[in-house]
Amino acid sequence: MTTASVLDEAFVGEAPRPTIPPASLASEVARKHGVGKLRQISEMLRLKFGRGRLYFREYYDSGLFDPSIPFEDKLDYVGTRGSRNLNAELSHDELLTLRSLVADKVMCSSLLRQFGFAATETQAVVTTARRFGAVPALTSVEELRRFLKGKARYPLFSKPQLTCDSQLTVLLERLDGEVLEFADGRKVPLDEFCAQVVRNSADGVVFQSALRQHPEIEVITGRAVGTVRVVTIRKADMPDALYSVWKIPAPGTMSDDLRQQGALVAPVNTCTGQVGRACAGFGLSAEAIETHPVTGRAITGFQLPFWEDLRQMARNAHALFPEYGILGWDIAITESGPVIIECRDNPLHTIYQRAFGRGIRNAEFLPIFERVAAWSQMKLAQQKGRARKRRAEQ
Image 1 (cartoon, rainbow, N blue to C red):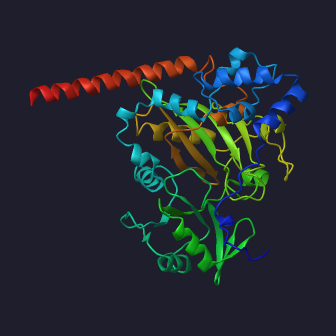
Image 2 (cartoon, rainbow, N blue to C red):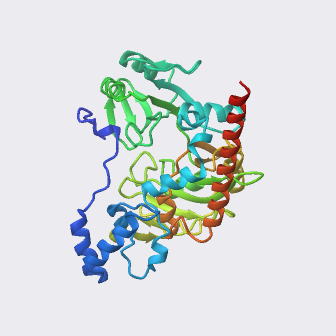
Image 3 (cartoon, one colour):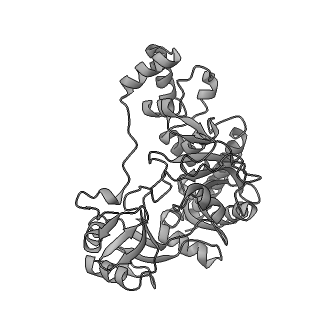
């Protein structure tokens, strides 16, 4: 292991996966799949301006150039914009009075713990703008240094407070004198780490107690925690799980960010917790994975531990926020059971599409989405009606 140089800030985020210019992709698709460039352009334009709102890059990443996929099935796919639009249909902005709380990693995890859910423990927050009661707010390099040398309980996991970026996402195993040891084997001088965290902490950086995965999972995927994304949907009486995927960290990394090269995503049977065949890569480089590329352990057919507990946890947590039509829950499975890592109020459905190989707006899900969207519109109309009545009475 070597002492890492952090002057270029490389340690605070993982390198994005390489991309190939669309022109090169178009030529490669034409050569490998016999789909001419004009047909590709025609399909991309139709999907870009359709309800799925796919960027050209997303057309290729999703493998929608494949001529074996009927075009009507391609229309079921969404891009990042289409995913956001779908979530807005199901969770109308004017109903979401708790959005700032749900999106805040510190506030949301604290609320969940208050109501008895197993959720991440925040040890400290690097911020100059806010305070969090008994949770230390570290406002300077010296305060962060003092915390990491004193009250911090290792291992620690740091991440941005409000965003989903992998920037500042680091698993700290221990402090050895004046050197921090990362879970990926790197060693970083304490002072340089503190300086960079504070310099990049405009929106807050959270330090939470790191979790250890269930031994049956760790033996397959390694030390880094790979969470299960459970997306829940509001129903008349109680939210239910719509779909689940397992995010498997890339070998040698410290988080399950799927943008990291080598990360895998696998479909999970929401009723049973059994894992299907994983997917690695995007578009032309996508491949099906049955066993982990490093450990050689089987992924396909693996039964996730504590599945019913995990599923019920996601449903019950969503019930705290009934105004949301849809929510995503990133849940780790430890030796003692599931633990909620984060709530996603705008879950990205391209993850589902990549894992399951079909569009999110498929024939199975569309009737569910229509019912949830109708409920949101009804509640919004009721809310506006009450507001008009109050104004009339004033």
